Image (cartoon, rainbow, N blue to C red; front, side):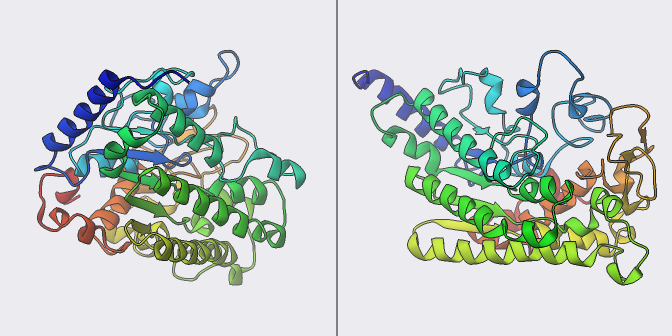
Length: 395
């Protein structure tokens, strides 16, 4: 390994400290570091898609039409939860790591506001786990373990020294988002015909991997981490279509969601919360925030009209028809899929993902509402009275 460069180390340290001071009066964090899947991917996946052949659905219109006016690689019509969080903390949208090139051609200035390692379709577990159980992972998979390898590569690029000490100032003042991750571990299996009992056995493995990732990030210097749980997958248009039933007892009367699938998601969340409690005891100097995605979005399913979703909560805005406008063989973006006139009136975007309007409500519930434990406002008291973020303004 090359000898440590005093000039390079000093330059990196000065950059981090100056960036920290410039945001001290405006934000609780100087940057955002993100891991996860399509719920958080701000544009990594297109860099991994083959140059020839059918382009990925998320690179085609109508994706991105609401805010960006063109596809960005985000799986929505506009911004994601991570985008609204960045806006609230007066930070730029978090740049995808692969924006620096497939070989991670990054430097200390190109990603000074953070980096996003999330990838569409990513799983927590590695491919070998699924291969052994006969589960097909349809996309180029970048598991959570692989994303952590990218992160270590990233650190070596922005602070190329013999240790990560020079980067700790950067990591310590970052909000680290670990997920949502794990949802695809279940999606690939359940929507691939694997029985619930077998997929349920995946959950401890998924949670253990997430816990290991959190521990590794803490050892690298992370101080504030937000870890989301799983969504109520029984309300997903794709799951409602795949597990369509004539037995009304299978559905929740108040929402129309499938009971057993929501119980499955809650099982994952219960194990995850126990794992986070364990890690908190081992690392009392860190703040590990549980983001309750489940209940944040259940607000929308229970009362869509009150939240402005006149188009409904269960049917997809963009899809291939059927009772939930979701056809698992005709994805949004590919013909003959159709798109609603106003995505802001819908909760679901394309069967598996949410509209920008729904993501905004979820982000609001995390930043201003009751869906973080401990409350994010105790970590960043400025959130209680701040009015600088776009989320502060009524919908």
